[in-house]
Every structure is written in C-alpha cells, then in structure tokens.
Amino acid sequence: MGQTVWVKKAALTETQIHDDILPAIGDGEVRLKIESFSVTANNVTYAVIGDLFGYWNFFPAEGDFGVVPMWGHAIVEESRHPEIAVGERVYGYLPMGTHLDVLPGKISSGGFTDMAAHRQPMSPIYNQYSRLADDPEHDPAKEAERMLFGPLFKTGFLIEAMFRREGWYGAQNLIMTSASSKTAMGLASVAKDSSPAITRIGLTSAGNVAFVERTGLYDHVLAYDDIGQIAAQPSVSVDFAGNSDVLRAIHAHLGDRLEYSCLVGATHVDARGSALGAGSDTAGPKPVLFFAPDHAVATVQELGPKGFGEAVGRSWASFLKAVDDVVEIDERHGLDAAAAAFVEALQGKADPQKGIVISF
Image (cartoon, rainbow, N blue to C red; front, top):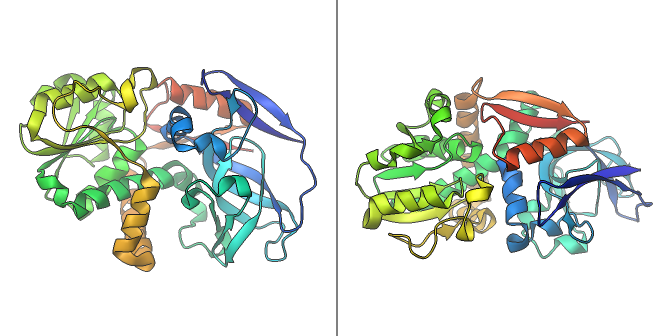
C-alpha cells in the first residue's frame, strides 16, 4: 500500500491523503520508493499554473484533484528491468507521495527517462532521472540543498542566459521581486558571476530586507514600498512574486525605461492577478511568462551539452558557497507534514530563511 497527497485544483489549500493500491509492476517497469523531497515556492507554481502547462498530468489523480510534483530522491524498491537494480538510488521529479512506478528508457550509466505514455506529451526535462552512483551533480553531503535549490537555481541560470543572449536588452539594472526566494537568489548569483556589469536590485517585503541583504547576492535591496527609489535607468525586471500590484508599480515607475518584463512563478498566489502579473493597462512592455524547458533547449544548443553541464556546474558551486549557512534546513517527516508545508508555502507563510525537506 502506498499513499499520495491529493490537492483540490480549484481550492489548493484543500488536501487529503489518498491510499494507493500498488499493482504488480510489468515487464521493464521499476517501482521507486520515495525517500525525500523539498517543498518550495516552485511547487506552488506547479499547482497554480498546473492546467496551463500540464503539471497536473505527470502524476494523475481523479476528479477535481491533482498531485503536485516535487523534486527529490528515491530508491528502487522493485525492478523488472535488467539494467536497473533494486537498491539503486535516483534523483528527479516525484509525486507528493510514497511511491512512483516508472518505465525506464534511454538508459545510461548516469540516468534514464521515464517512457510512460502519459508523460510523453510534456517536456522531457521533467521525465529524466539521475542515477546517483554515476551522477556528477550528486554530493551525499548536499542532498538537501540539491532538492531545495537545484531546480530553482537552474531556472535562474536559464533566465540569466536568456538575458545575456539578448545583450540584456540594453539594460543597466536587473530588478527582481521576491528577492528572498530561492529562484531569485539563484538568478542573482549567476548574474553576479556572469554579468557583473548589471546592477542587481532585489525587492522584498520589509520584514525580509535584512535577510536578503545578508545573502550578499544583491547590489541594492529595497522593500516593495520603496520601488520609487529605483533609478530611472534602462532596466529589465523578473517578477517571481506574481503580485500584480508590485509589478504594476515597477511598470508605472520605469515606464519606457523598462526594456523587458519577465514573469516567473507565483509566490503571492492571492494577488497574482491576470496571467500571474499585470493587466493590459500596465505601462511599459507586456510581461512575458518564462517557461524554463524552452530556454533550456536554447541554452544547450548555444553551449553544447558538455559546455552547458560545465557552465551549470561552475555556477552551482559558486551559488552553494554563497548560500552556505544562509538558509537553515528544516527537516520534517511524512505526508501530513508535506501537505501542511505545501499549504504554508501557498499562503506565503513559509520562512525564506528555512528550506523545508520532507523525509520518510
């Protein structure tokens, strides 16, 4: 018997623990027993835009309910595939639950892809699993950090790569909302290393200003009420908060000096407004929603697979040094704790100074 957290799609704070009858696996299939995963604002985004980008389709539930995807570690509990051994550990995209059955294909020493039919219409980036025994990104001492920061950091890496390809649209400033979020910190870190001429401006709630300043990743940190202090210079903005009032204030203040407005995720769910951002009456450029898998393809084409992996690795190592001891690991146990942590993140109650990891 397994269990999964089901979330009501139309009322995301409503969750239930669903008992799963685990059927016998078929030839070529593998059953993963989930060991751990993180709960972050990233998971909130998967739920908020689940219908728009198909995130509910990875781990289907029934009726009005869905299963929120997580990033984490699992161990092979049962295998009917000759190349995958019981006891092997993997890292990848998992349901908020205890088990996942996969159909491994495109197998290498470092990973495999789940070839389950229902997952093929979605981006392949989410269907790939790393085999930890031969995974250059795996550090046994940093498993919690990888779950918490890894996917979010890579999103930040891809945003910086997009802007750099476009010459930063002629901007001098990079403005980031929700600067305490892990994705914003990832972007700030990559920009600091790869585009040092760009001034990094972090916006956050008044209560988080001191924490964000302590990260050392931003040139300037301002509370949302102080948006008017931003210099009227050519700028690009990246909105991680999804708060339409904040985004509208940035647009209104900078107007035509805002060269590009990028939308990523939605941490302020109740205020996300139209299309996770500002409405049609907003000054300046029309906000553009960032979809990481598309930009991953473009960046890999630009750098080549080997160059891409090396660039990510260098930036990741630098980022881990920057956030060492900045974020405390908050380890919790079981699916009840996972459901509660998801609702905390959804309601904006999660402490940015802590990273929640669920273990079993």
